[in-house]
Image 1: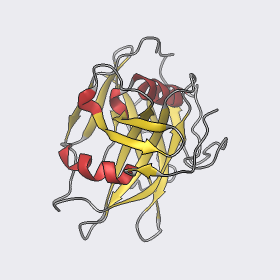
Image 2: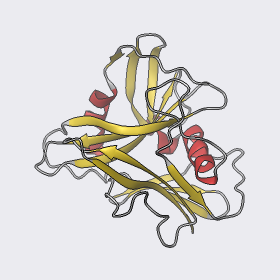
Image 3: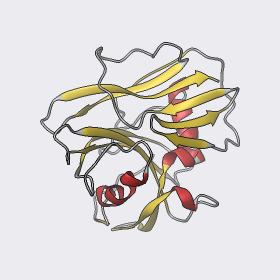
Length: 218
């Protein structure tokens, strides 16, 4: 079980994201820099206990209408080979020392964990409470079992989000800009064979819910 250390981070996660988000094709902001607040999310467990995996919702309040972004992140104690382009930045952790923070869609540990969550082979964990599961995460899957050994993500970003080629001719779509759903919990979108959804809070404290990721056949 991963341990959540309540300690100092320099720079903070939101400070790293403030510089990184405007470089993404799915970023919607127009200000010189986003004004970010942490609005929710969940974690997954790395079976090897080496990589931190977090799905953070960061809300940009720099415009009159806030925008909520889903930022899947991994935290590593050493650089990940051949993925320097996916590095969000580095930080000093008060307990663990230097940590390399990656866009998790490029990290095989996160992508494998997300697919296992969709299938029902992994459980979502609370973002800030040691050992606690997150009952607010909703998932579904209607496809055949996926073979995930040796998975090498091949993500592509566009204005709609990030698409990752997944096993057996499937495509994982990570919804980077969260669109509140009319139903709660959100149903699996038409044409998808699996999904993950969760609620978060807007800057005024109102609860919203959205689909975070979908799996489709190519």
